[in-house]
Amino acid sequence: MSPLADTAALFADRTRAAFCQALLDGRAWTAGELARHAGVTASTASEQISRLVAGGLLAEERQGRHRYVRLAGPEAAALTEALAAYDPGTPRPHTLAASGRQDAEARARTCYDHLAGRLGVDLADAMTARGLVDTASGIAVTPAGRDWLADALDYRQPTGARRPLVRTCLDWTERRSHLAGALGAALCTASLERGWVRRVGSGRAVKVTPAGSTAFGELLGVEA
Amino acid sequence: MSPLADTAALFADRTRAAFCQALLDGRAWTAGELARHAGVTASTASEQISRLVAGGLLAEERQGRHRYVRLAGPEAAALTEALAAYDPGTPRPHTLAASGRQDAEARARTCYDHLAGRLGVDLADAMTARGLVDTASGIAVTPAGRDWLADALDYRQPTGARRPLVRTCLDWTERRSHLAGALGAALCTASLERGWVRRVGSGRAVKVTPAGSTAFGELLGVEA
DNA sequence: GGGACGGTTCGGCGGGCGCCGAAGTGTTCC
DNA sequence: GGAACACTTCGGCGCCCGCCGAACCGTCCC
Image (cartoon, rainbow over all chains, first blue to last red):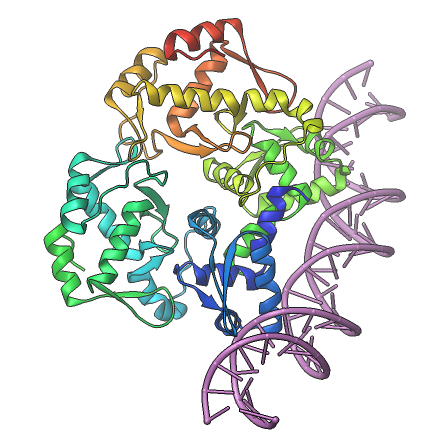
């Protein structure tokens, strides 16, 4: 086919799409977990995973009798997000029935390696409002933002880093941008390590802890 | 299916992918032109175009007995580019045989509404080197860049604009970033209007005119 | 009106793909 | 060694989808 069509075909299947979206939490899943998650048999999952790996979208790691698999990299995650976020003009039906289960994810979740959902958008807004990132023309970290990253998160950009310090990521529940890139990853890592947020369930949803409420409030004036 | 899989399925076909890539030149094509371009019959093209329109990826406009069709918007173009650009680790086979026809496109072409190819990358590098855009942390237009846009291109960002002033777009021939967003569009528009570049053939390729060589040299120090 | 032309609709063909169950391989634990 | 377990391979079924040719519908031009 054509490279474009080949790449797209990897996503163009209910089961494979479900795999990729599940893996957007940035963690490695076993083949069996993915199979149960998508509601297919182990054999089907095995085949589909192999296709995704062959297509370069997933990276695998064998450990004993387990096959761990994760998204191949930030580019793969970005592509998955971009496809999931594309939704031309549909004014969000947003059925209330299904929203119960999705509620936790809508409030706060991880998106590959950064925070998303309402929390992610709030954090992004707060950082913009405080002049830590500048969205007036593109998106960039301000000098004040660099200081904040060093002070609050103890993160300093490696010299000669090729990964952009900050990148926007369109949120598929909020339909607004939140912060990805190295900054987003650092914020997410710090939040998990310091117990500001905790993963709930086996999916992407996270919950802001009391300590997190305090921290986000003090550091950014966000009440969550 | 799932929204993700549905969207991906639109691209997951040789013919439809060829349509989208052709339309990346930002212009409207007739159904017949697309059919010939992709090497399928008119009936097939008609059906596939209808699917892309129904999927919200293409916008159509009927004029007399012609059906003009173009990409639905910048998001659709960005998605197409993102899919085309994703190519995990393949170190560019770059067959010399096919490169003849593609040579013009590799040198300079439009990418939806901005300039790409070697020219696009050179312009992006020059603007970065001259401090008009800042890529140290994300991508943003500097104050000097705003002045340059006003002076050289007579472009001023509308107040309250929701489109980012500048955005990067990964080039599928150069595998490097060039400038998209409102800045990229303004630069492309100015270049075409002022005769700095001229479209060649029916595709996306453009050619730098002598006047363009002078202008790019004086404005940005780019020799092209 | 008549002919040329762009586009669409319909029927039908062929191939590819997703899925499963059954059998098989390799690993872990007792 | 044997049993449980995670995963893979294979054969086969059924469906979907891309494609074409033929007939048809509008539009444009003489």
